[in-house]
View 1 (cartoon, helix red, strand yellow):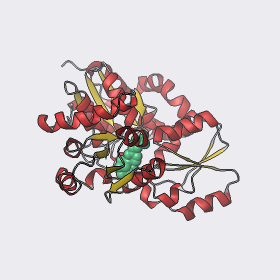
View 2 (cartoon, rainbow, N blue to C red):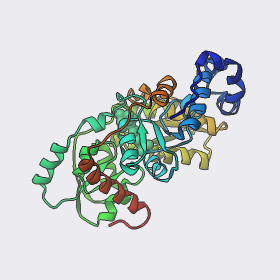
View 3 (cartoon, rainbow, N blue to C red):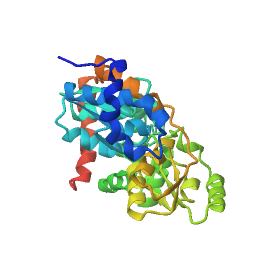
Length: 341
Ligand code: 13P
Ligand code: SF4
């Protein structure tokens, strides 16, 4: 494949010009001195994408210079899966964590899907294996297995249907059963049970970012900031969700802010999310207690550039596992199209 990879040091004359439009909206979040460090990478990545017929899909938790600097499409886990299906690009660089890249590959078996750092894992995905799911199915025969997309392809392959935080309630209701095995996020499972009345058999998987928030922390912020709107991700413990004004996926929270334009917002989620939402909602004051996701933060601009230059690391899934895992993901997408059940 012919490429025009430009050494970073040679880019400096043109980078200001090439990156200005990307930078302007994030000026209040990313200081100019910091942008000077990012800009050469942003310019180089955006050029190389064209040469490679590649797109960057970015999760809402990616840092602002990635999210607003090089992403072509962005969103929550559900949106990334849907966008991956619709793209004409030959190469997808997933600026997010490994399970997101795997889902993109499942839905695009003939495309090249790259993850800029294989260490971009997820504590939920690490909490369960395919063998664990097989044991659960033996213990609860006939009970459908609903699996959060924050899992490996091997775990999805053992599941009846997948879900994300934005469609978990809808997916569970679509099955029409009194009981489901819901894996692996205990707290998301409890949230779904509270919204549906369906009996859930749970696994003790937790997100390292969301399990650390406490109700006391939220009450302290409510006391310190008049009229603050509290938005929380359903991966938080139930006692934290009980304190929130709105519970939803990352894109759900972003949409809620842009539609309601509250004066002040507390986002009980990963740190970069508030920055990315602030860029798009300059009139909303973001109060920022947050926890960093160490996995999401392994993805950086230099690693995205390296990934495109070397076409690494390509996501590869065993074909038999992929076929079974794809069925569970596609069944989830059909629920969104109104064909579930
Ligand atoms: P969303 O699907 O809401 O973006 O969540 C993904 C995730 O990993 C949250 O921690
Ligand atoms: Fe996984 Fe939590 Fe990080 Fe999301 S925020 S990728 S659930 S560890």
